[in-house]
Amino acid sequence: MSRFFNPRLTSLEAYTPGEQPRDRTYIKLNTNESPYPPSRGVRRAMDRQALDDLRLYCDPNATVLKEKLAKLYDKEPSQIFVANGSDDILNFAFLAFGAEGVLFPDISYGFYEVFANLHSLPYEKIPLQQDFSIDVKPYCGQKRMVVIANPNAPTGIALPLRKIQQILEANPDNVVLIDEAYVDFGGESCAKLTEKYPNLLCVQTFSKSRSMAGARLGFAIGSPELIADLETIKYSTNPYNVNALTQKAGAAAVEDNGYYMRNCRKIIKSRLYTKKELEKLGFTVLPSKANFLFAKSDKIGGMELYLRLKEKGILVRHFEKNRICDYNRITIGSQKEMEAFIAAVEEILGA
Ligand code: PMP
Image (tube, rainbow, N blue to C red; front, side, top):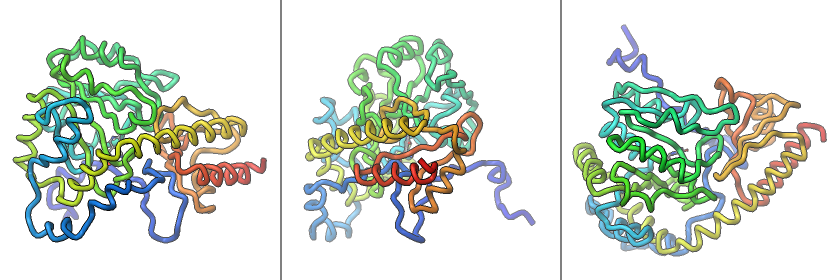
């Protein structure tokens, strides 16, 4: 008898999340989390009342959180959608808008292909250029949904806003989803373009720049029509998809935006330090606007470096995939962690 009760699932390849090991304490530079804790306001919000309120269902409309996000981004609450991590939003968006087909880069966030397959959507992967940048031409004049991570992952390379506008101008009738998971680390957000382009969906997350990966909170900004479609899917699957504690923590985090943006600046500084040090050691490092670097050395293979670092208690992310298997993706941690990382790489290379 088959191990699977649904034969269709045997052929589906699920997403493999980055390691979250419990065997020892690592310097964790593998899943792009923030090295900094949630703000004081978030700590204060997790009070006795918040625990007592767990007795009740949470607000399915996440009213307070949406109002705060709307104010921060100069929008109306009807232009904001919130969900259980931005993965949840991507899933809903593929389901809602991908029936005619989906286009995304061949090297990008691995979940795009998983969602396309899960929902049996036709899709095409557009190759990145030789230097790993995105050529926008193949995305123009298409009658399909476009999904682009900006900055892209795992490369960290950002696309200027005028290039995204070029895609939007050339695709007025289908949804263009810009996944801005890493935008706060030096990218340019397309949030301000959503009034001009009702087909633009700008997706962000509290997991990276806002130190809340474990709370699972993502949000999207778009025209009220796009947001209403996402709400229909949400109310048809799980109306309470953002739990009460996360709604409270998220609202408090928005209030402390200054703290998080200061952390982003610290991370950008440590990114510059790490890039410079890796280049001194002979690494090729792609130009990143994210909280990670994508780097390779011709002195050591990508897999070997990953394994040797792991032995030393440092986790980075390696993808055993065509075109990128020589590289590792290194999350930018605290300055101290990055100094320990560079020291470990020097030791491994015998520098
Ligand atoms: N988009 C990109 C490009 C990512 O790298 C990630 C993180 N794995 C996500 C979305 C999802 O993040 P989350 O579900 O934690 O919001």
